Length: 114
Length: 115
Image (cartoon, rainbow over all chains, first blue to last red; front, top):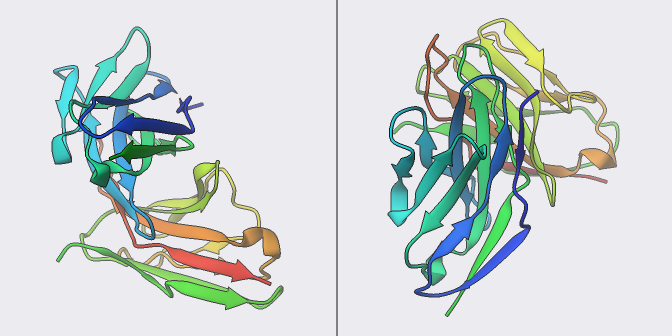
């Protein structure tokens, strides 16, 4: 069975500092990995995905994520946080073959302090 | 504009009164899914559909029904709502080819309160 863990409920970071939101996963076979962001009273917005190739994936709004197969991790990063990055972040995984579903983590709330 | 729409956006109802939340997408996606979001639990999948007339249970299907008679629509039906179904509901869609890597697109959400 597929699963996703986001070990931190809350991450606080000062504006201008680098941020990391952690995600680990479990899946049979190769994974497709995704990060979504949810702003208050909004739906989920796609940030980035890893399918294959370069382990460092760049996405929207200056975010990037690094796929680490040996550690089964896909941590979200940004070199310099903005107050407007404050939101709820979800990691998701699906197995890389037909018919498999997306499984989401519980979410991590990011607060960027001015 | 490519989008997933849900209606209604907000709904307050009473226990036992049947309701339907509609979901429609205009991207010709094969795959559609319903999730519920509860604090601390993230998104949990209720039902999903790989294509027309093909539906299957997700992780939390109890108390819900779905149908997929047309490719664009995937309504969520609560035959007899109960207070524990008070939640924020999201519909999502994506392509689902044999080697699909496509992203899921989400609707704006429906906030349901069952009294």
